[in-house]
Image 1: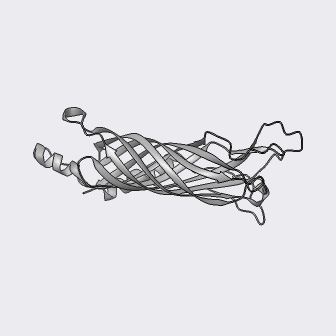
Image 2: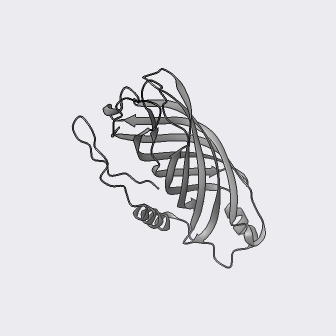
Image 3: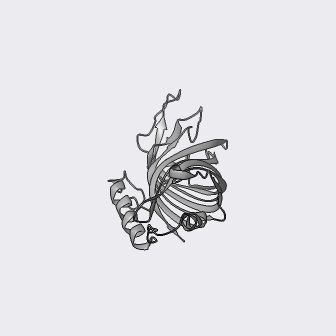
Length: 240
């Protein structure tokens, strides 16, 4: 599921965003698409073996919406001011191909129409009120392991994932020289719970994912390790 932030772009410099996409609209669009593309639910006459075989493998696609929050400053400078990303909405599209009962290979793309902010520090000089926007993009591939259950609780499956890819931070010119646009490698660790067969051939997923990267300040030349946590909820479908 994807969503696009409504971003107003002015000549030379972008101003504050006038609004964010509505999460409900994004989830509704994914719900309708999943119903249209999803498989027909298994009927009562299917045997337990057939149901289990259908749950073993295949490809699933999930759209998610949530929040992304940094846990450290983006830059720190004793001769100027510190900066960080604001907590903002995040939208992601995840796909997983289950190669076996427990293991899968997946991809994830995340976008957040974030903003930059200054952080209180010991700097005594003038501090700007507006650092502009900071569009956050991440694309990763990962290995997934799910903890399969049995019996009536088999539909709720905890899972973990690990992988890597690329993170792109695109900022406005007003943020220079403290922050400039940057593309860097990113690692990722994730954990969550997926619930299959919630109706209409849909599945549900709740996830927390850590995007681990390093950002180098153009003003100081120093790098800082970044942990950006995305907490998302989504709906999807299995394509068997």
